[in-house]
Length: 88
Image (tube, rainbow, N blue to C red; front, side):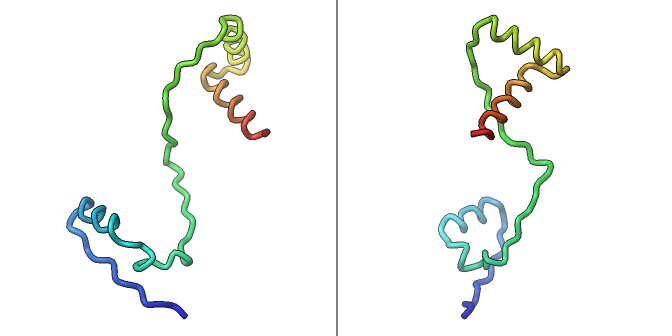
């Protein structure tokens, strides 16, 4: 048996809406079983800058490999890290 859903009120501002959802359960207002996945193709993942100390010979080898592939060495490091994580 489906229960009746409450009507989502109109909000004057985003701040007002935020306060409302902080104290209310969305399942009283939305039927999440009817939700559909969405794709946000222009959404860029957040990144964080890190400092990584590498032996000079290792960094030189990475830069050489990146140069041979015509890609920035930082990008190559990211690709290799992702590939390694995916292989585990």
